[in-house]
Length: 119
Image (cartoon, rainbow, N blue to C red; front, top):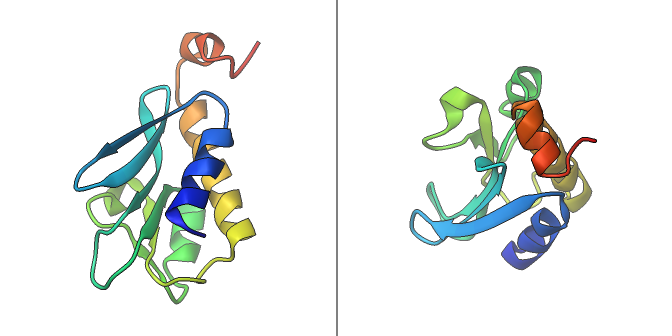
């Protein structure tokens, strides 16, 4: 997945906003809370995809080659894909979608309603 494809996919999720910050990182939010980031953090070259995940997914994913605790965010159960192809595009999209849902679920009912995430 390229940064452009990442941005297009994140933009397709409901009630998202995008900012570029922290050294040209693409930061995606729902309700003002971050759920996914494309950055150049860490060793090596190229873009890195970072996403929030559940405790269980975090424990499983960081055991896989090319997936590590995300710099600066690991204590909050964020994973960084630092090797291209560690997850295929469909898997990465599923984890980003799950990150969006996880962050959305932590918003207040009122915020979710205002964002059109629940009726």
